[in-house]
Length: 377
Image 1 (cartoon, one colour):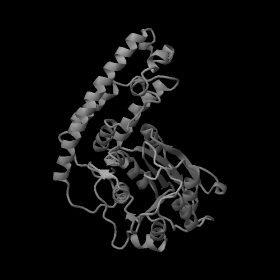
Image 2 (cartoon, helix red, strand yellow):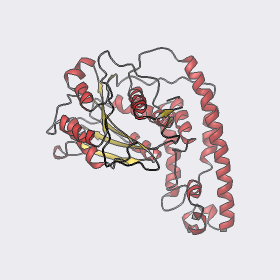
Image 3 (spheres, rainbow, N blue to C red):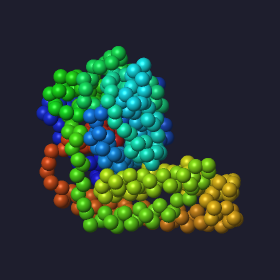
């Protein structure tokens, strides 16, 4: 897609609060690499299975949308965090039924793994408390060009719990973190329940979505070709270190998780894997070699897959370079096919009401990106 988690969101009239630009803190400085940081705060109480399903269905589309943004001609690093709240099965009332599922990370397979492991259970939803925890616990960027966004989604009144949402959002804004709210249910309930006011206070956007709406993908003639490319792409990874083999296996598992949602979702994941943001240098020898060629000469062969353990350093380096060349070619092929795929989708998509989680995230990201001076492809 031209831009990440699906097609553009149509919110209920008068249900959108404007995203306002804010002056940057004086202590913020410009670093070499800009970050886009997104914290997803998801209600996992017993009525929210549909919301979790939408999050699974739109993760890779969101990633692909984020990769269309550039700042100063460079694609920023992308980090995503995940919290669940409102679930009696995760923690006690003393902890406000909140769990940090994963901190801000660029490990996209890990994000997928944790997202697909979420389970719903009845509980009390404390919006102010989960916003406060995400602001205080996460390592938010300090660069003036960093885009920092919180998305909180749920259906109960925004005012529940001992932490006032206004004070929690005030802390977020002090660090230039914008708060967007996504109410699951009827629009008027969201307004009465102060979800709209939460977005206005947080200088973000308010959305009302049908969280039980099934995400629809347009099947294209290019999907099967991209899927075959993805299978070839996986063969270019060489796990190293204590968890290398396990992480390589997890890559395949996350492919299957994406495919369990739909073939279109699987294709979106394959497109994400063709981009630079899909960096597995923490466990893949090929990605690590691109950053530090000395890794081949310094690594213990015993920490490589069995078929490489008896090879010389020169042989391993040659294999790694061959895998790197092969990967670049496959990723280029996927990229070219994805352009044709998107053109097909654009010409065959039907006009319909867009009110899902992914479209809400996309709309607000692009609006803020324009304000902050980001370029889009």
